[in-house]
Image (cartoon, protein in one colour):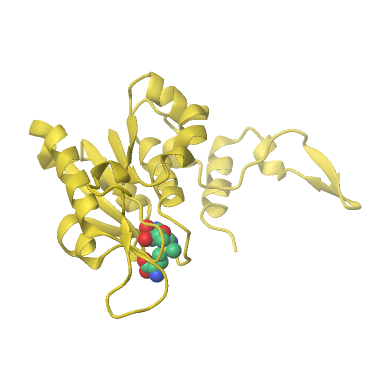
Length: 216
Ligand code: SAM
Protein backbone atom coordinates (compact mmCIF):
# COMPACT_ATOMS: atom_id res chain seq x y z
CA UNK A 1 0.00 0.00 0.00
CA UNK A 2 1.36 3.40 -1.00
CA UNK A 3 0.40 6.60 0.80
CA UNK A 4 1.11 9.93 -0.91
CA UNK A 5 0.49 13.03 1.19
CA UNK A 6 0.12 16.50 -0.31
CA UNK A 7 0.91 19.06 2.37
CA UNK A 8 2.52 22.43 3.01
CA UNK A 9 4.04 21.04 6.24
CA UNK A 10 5.86 17.82 5.29
CA UNK A 11 8.13 18.00 8.36
CA UNK A 12 5.16 17.23 10.62
CA UNK A 13 5.50 13.62 9.47
CA UNK A 14 9.18 13.09 10.26
CA UNK A 15 8.77 11.58 13.76
CA UNK A 16 5.76 9.58 12.64
CA UNK A 17 7.78 7.92 9.88
CA UNK A 18 10.73 7.07 12.10
CA UNK A 19 9.05 5.33 15.01
CA UNK A 20 7.40 2.06 15.96
CA UNK A 21 5.48 -0.23 13.62
CA UNK A 22 5.17 2.35 10.83
CA UNK A 23 8.95 2.62 10.60
CA UNK A 24 9.30 -1.19 10.59
CA UNK A 25 6.64 -1.56 7.88
CA UNK A 26 8.46 1.04 5.77
CA UNK A 27 11.73 -0.85 6.15
CA UNK A 28 10.04 -4.13 5.24
CA UNK A 29 8.47 -2.32 2.24
CA UNK A 30 5.00 -3.41 3.27
CA UNK A 31 3.96 0.21 2.88
CA UNK A 32 5.44 3.36 1.39
CA UNK A 33 4.69 6.86 2.67
CA UNK A 34 5.80 9.88 0.68
CA UNK A 35 5.15 13.50 1.53
CA UNK A 36 4.84 16.03 -1.30
CA UNK A 37 5.43 19.71 -0.67
CA UNK A 38 2.50 21.47 -2.30
CA UNK A 39 4.48 24.66 -3.06
CA UNK A 40 6.44 22.60 -5.61
CA UNK A 41 3.41 22.89 -7.90
CA UNK A 42 3.14 26.68 -7.77
CA UNK A 43 4.37 28.92 -10.57
CA UNK A 44 4.85 32.33 -8.92
CA UNK A 45 7.91 33.66 -7.13
CA UNK A 46 6.23 33.49 -3.72
CA UNK A 47 5.01 29.94 -4.20
CA UNK A 48 1.47 31.00 -3.34
CA UNK A 49 -0.89 28.20 -2.31
CA UNK A 50 -3.70 30.33 -0.84
CA UNK A 51 -5.95 33.24 -1.69
CA UNK A 52 -8.68 35.41 -0.21
CA UNK A 53 -12.16 33.86 -0.25
CA UNK A 54 -14.60 35.04 -2.93
CA UNK A 55 -17.55 36.74 -1.28
CA UNK A 56 -15.37 38.05 1.53
CA UNK A 57 -14.73 36.68 4.98
CA UNK A 58 -11.75 36.08 7.21
CA UNK A 59 -8.63 34.06 6.45
CA UNK A 60 -7.33 32.38 3.35
CA UNK A 61 -8.44 29.45 1.23
CA UNK A 62 -6.13 26.94 -0.43
CA UNK A 63 -6.00 27.35 -4.19
CA UNK A 64 -7.21 24.69 -6.56
CA UNK A 65 -4.46 24.79 -9.25
CA UNK A 66 -1.43 23.59 -7.24
CA UNK A 67 -3.52 20.75 -5.79
CA UNK A 68 -4.84 19.84 -9.25
CA UNK A 69 -1.31 19.69 -10.66
CA UNK A 70 0.02 17.71 -7.70
CA UNK A 71 -2.73 15.10 -7.98
CA UNK A 72 -2.30 14.84 -11.76
CA UNK A 73 1.44 14.29 -11.42
CA UNK A 74 1.05 11.69 -8.68
CA UNK A 75 -1.55 9.86 -10.76
CA UNK A 76 0.74 9.90 -13.81
CA UNK A 77 3.54 8.52 -11.63
CA UNK A 78 1.26 5.65 -10.69
CA UNK A 79 1.24 4.64 -14.41
CA UNK A 80 -0.77 1.45 -14.95
CA UNK A 81 -1.97 1.48 -11.35
CA UNK A 82 -3.86 4.77 -11.75
CA UNK A 83 -7.10 2.83 -11.74
CA UNK A 84 -6.30 1.73 -8.21
CA UNK A 85 -5.45 5.17 -6.90
CA UNK A 86 -7.93 6.85 -4.55
CA UNK A 87 -7.69 10.58 -3.90
CA UNK A 88 -8.87 11.67 -0.46
CA UNK A 89 -9.46 15.24 0.72
CA UNK A 90 -9.53 15.82 4.47
CA UNK A 91 -12.27 18.13 5.67
CA UNK A 92 -14.27 18.47 8.89
CA UNK A 93 -17.32 18.54 6.59
CA UNK A 94 -16.44 15.19 5.02
CA UNK A 95 -17.87 11.73 5.61
CA UNK A 96 -16.83 10.28 8.96
CA UNK A 97 -13.82 7.97 8.60
CA UNK A 98 -14.32 4.59 10.30
CA UNK A 99 -12.97 1.05 10.43
CA UNK A 100 -15.14 -0.02 7.47
CA UNK A 101 -13.58 2.76 5.37
CA UNK A 102 -10.06 1.63 6.38
CA UNK A 103 -10.96 -1.91 5.32
CA UNK A 104 -12.49 -0.75 2.02
CA UNK A 105 -9.42 1.30 1.09
CA UNK A 106 -7.20 -1.79 1.26
CA UNK A 107 -8.34 -2.62 -2.28
CA UNK A 108 -6.45 0.39 -3.67
CA UNK A 109 -2.71 0.36 -4.48
CA UNK A 110 -2.28 4.00 -3.60
CA UNK A 111 -4.05 6.53 -1.42
CA UNK A 112 -3.36 10.18 -2.18
CA UNK A 113 -4.20 12.45 0.76
CA UNK A 114 -4.79 16.18 0.37
CA UNK A 115 -4.16 18.03 3.64
CA UNK A 116 -5.95 21.36 3.94
CA UNK A 117 -4.83 24.32 6.05
CA UNK A 118 -6.08 27.85 6.73
CA UNK A 119 -9.85 28.24 6.24
CA UNK A 120 -9.98 25.12 4.12
CA UNK A 121 -9.65 24.21 0.45
CA UNK A 122 -11.32 25.66 -2.67
CA UNK A 123 -14.53 23.62 -2.97
CA UNK A 124 -13.68 22.56 -6.54
CA UNK A 125 -11.12 20.16 -5.08
CA UNK A 126 -13.91 18.31 -3.24
CA UNK A 127 -16.20 18.45 -6.28
CA UNK A 128 -13.88 17.58 -9.16
CA UNK A 129 -10.51 16.31 -7.94
CA UNK A 130 -10.99 14.19 -4.81
CA UNK A 131 -12.71 10.81 -5.01
CA UNK A 132 -13.77 11.07 -1.38
CA UNK A 133 -13.95 13.79 1.27
CA UNK A 134 -13.28 12.45 4.74
CA UNK A 135 -13.46 13.76 8.30
CA UNK A 136 -11.68 12.07 11.19
CA UNK A 137 -14.21 13.33 13.71
CA UNK A 138 -16.70 16.02 14.68
CA UNK A 139 -14.09 18.61 15.60
CA UNK A 140 -11.88 21.07 13.71
CA UNK A 141 -8.11 20.53 13.42
CA UNK A 142 -5.61 23.14 12.21
CA UNK A 143 -4.78 20.99 9.20
CA UNK A 144 -5.21 17.62 7.54
CA UNK A 145 -1.77 16.29 8.57
CA UNK A 146 -2.86 14.82 11.91
CA UNK A 147 -5.92 13.37 10.17
CA UNK A 148 -3.63 11.75 7.57
CA UNK A 149 -1.47 10.15 10.27
CA UNK A 150 -4.51 8.71 12.06
CA UNK A 151 -5.89 7.31 8.82
CA UNK A 152 -2.52 5.90 7.71
CA UNK A 153 -2.14 4.03 11.01
CA UNK A 154 -5.59 2.53 10.79
CA UNK A 155 -5.18 1.41 7.16
CA UNK A 156 -1.54 0.29 7.46
CA UNK A 157 -2.24 -1.99 10.43
CA UNK A 158 -4.64 -3.94 8.20
CA UNK A 159 -1.92 -4.62 5.61
CA UNK A 160 -0.87 -8.29 5.94
CA UNK A 161 2.40 -8.57 7.87
CA UNK A 162 2.12 -5.15 9.52
CA UNK A 163 1.18 -6.46 12.96
CA UNK A 164 3.36 -8.96 14.85
CA UNK A 165 0.29 -10.89 15.88
CA UNK A 166 -2.30 -11.25 13.14
CA UNK A 167 -4.91 -11.87 15.83
CA UNK A 168 -4.56 -8.40 17.27
CA UNK A 169 -6.03 -6.93 14.10
CA UNK A 170 -9.45 -8.17 14.98
CA UNK A 171 -9.64 -9.22 18.59
CA UNK A 172 -8.12 -6.40 20.60
CA UNK A 173 -11.25 -4.33 20.96
CA UNK A 174 -12.04 -5.21 24.56
CA UNK A 175 -10.88 -4.34 28.06
CA UNK A 176 -7.29 -5.49 28.74
CA UNK A 177 -5.15 -5.98 31.87
CA UNK A 178 -1.52 -6.87 32.57
CA UNK A 179 0.64 -7.37 35.70
CA UNK A 180 0.30 -6.67 38.58
CA UNK A 181 -2.79 -8.68 39.44
CA UNK A 182 -3.72 -6.15 42.12
CA UNK A 183 -2.75 -2.51 42.60
CA UNK A 184 -3.75 0.15 45.12
CA UNK A 185 -5.25 3.17 43.39
CA UNK A 186 -6.15 5.93 45.78
CA UNK A 187 -6.93 3.91 48.91
CA UNK A 188 -8.56 0.92 47.27
CA UNK A 189 -7.14 -2.28 45.94
CA UNK A 190 -8.06 -2.75 42.27
CA UNK A 191 -7.75 -6.29 40.94
CA UNK A 192 -7.86 -7.95 37.55
CA UNK A 193 -11.23 -9.70 37.00
CA UNK A 194 -10.74 -13.23 38.32
CA UNK A 195 -12.21 -14.81 35.19
CA UNK A 196 -9.15 -13.65 33.21
CA UNK A 197 -6.91 -15.61 35.60
CA UNK A 198 -9.04 -18.75 35.39
CA UNK A 199 -7.46 -20.31 32.30
CA UNK A 200 -10.98 -21.11 31.07
CA UNK A 201 -10.79 -19.92 27.46
CA UNK A 202 -14.50 -20.19 26.76
CA UNK A 203 -15.36 -18.07 29.80
CA UNK A 204 -12.60 -15.58 28.96
CA UNK A 205 -13.95 -15.25 25.40
CA UNK A 206 -17.46 -14.66 26.76
CA UNK A 207 -16.16 -12.06 29.22
CA UNK A 208 -14.28 -10.29 26.44
CA UNK A 209 -17.30 -10.27 24.18
CA UNK A 210 -19.27 -8.64 26.98
CA UNK A 211 -16.55 -6.07 27.70
CA UNK A 212 -15.81 -5.16 24.08
CA UNK A 213 -16.64 -1.98 22.22
CA UNK A 214 -16.44 1.64 23.22
CA UNK A 215 -16.32 3.13 26.68
CA UNK A 216 -18.34 6.09 27.78
N1 SAM B 1 -14.02 25.63 8.05
C1 SAM B 1 -12.97 24.91 7.41
C2 SAM B 1 -13.55 23.74 6.61
O1 SAM B 1 -14.74 23.47 6.74
O2 SAM B 1 -12.82 23.05 5.88
C3 SAM B 1 -11.98 24.42 8.45
C4 SAM B 1 -10.62 24.36 7.92
S1 SAM B 1 -9.48 23.58 9.03
C5 SAM B 1 -8.98 24.90 10.06
C6 SAM B 1 -8.08 23.34 7.99
C7 SAM B 1 -7.96 21.96 7.43
O3 SAM B 1 -7.80 21.02 8.46
C8 SAM B 1 -9.12 21.45 6.61
O4 SAM B 1 -9.09 21.93 5.29
C9 SAM B 1 -8.90 19.95 6.67
O5 SAM B 1 -7.99 19.49 5.70
C10 SAM B 1 -8.28 19.76 8.05
N2 SAM B 1 -9.24 19.31 9.06
C11 SAM B 1 -9.73 20.02 10.09
N3 SAM B 1 -10.57 19.31 10.84
C12 SAM B 1 -10.63 18.08 10.27
C13 SAM B 1 -11.34 16.89 10.57
N4 SAM B 1 -12.16 16.80 11.60
N5 SAM B 1 -11.16 15.82 9.77
C14 SAM B 1 -10.33 15.90 8.70
N6 SAM B 1 -9.63 17.00 8.37
C15 SAM B 1 -9.78 18.08 9.14
